[in-house]
Image 1 (cartoon, helix red, strand yellow):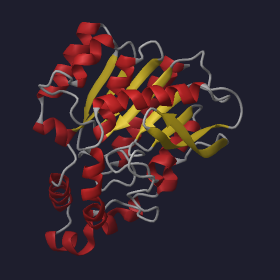
Image 2 (image 1 turned 45 degrees about the vertical axis):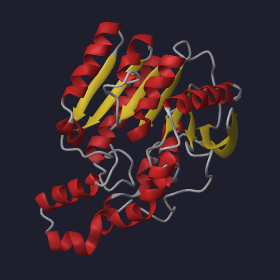
Image 3 (image 1 turned 135 degrees about the vertical axis):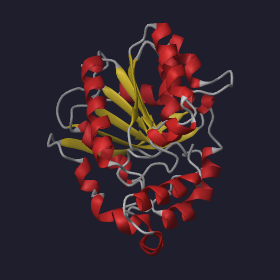
Image 4 (image 1 turned 90 degrees about the vertical axis):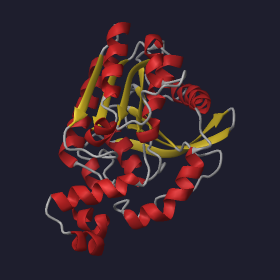
Length: 298
């Protein structure tokens, strides 16, 4: 779902909304949007938190992760998988924001088998066309090393890690959430660990409904977790049948799920450093996430 068509969609979108093609080319998406995307906006809650970089042992090595949780007490665990551009400042800020709402959050570097380096520099406020061009080949290369099986084996190790942490309340169910290519990870881990995963969320997730025998939507009968599936309008335009197949799968399984196409959004609209970021709709999706976690984990 994340390929070079995104840049073309962004150009068309911003030209439609008043930016000329010449201005778009001169400014680029990053310059046009940087002032609109302050990452500090992610941390609007005020509950004190403890944050640290940690190593999680897996069957394939050590995954470098960012672990953040409220400074006091024990709290439900949440595994947060980033999009194709991997661990970076934006996702650490999102993890911290979620922790400030009362959760113990583990943000994962999915590419730990091959690199512990960030693809997106910390000083890149927006993944604009220039940044994207520089990191896209490497991102695709790294993404190709992952599979449904690595998702599950990693997910089991991540859950085992958080369940050993004093800040995690293991009497409460855990949650898993993913963006872009890792939206499907929420389905796979919830299906693999139904006794532990109580909530799952996918934000502009790719490949949730395919014609392959391992399609994520076919796992729904194994899932006990309540779900939030937030779909980009541009993704829905290309595959309008996906939401219907997802709705049918959850309804048939009797599993609660909120499945919605977010109007006016492009693929990648949730992370605040995305060139497709839509603040109003991203905030609405975040509110729906908090509601889901409150209902299912607390």
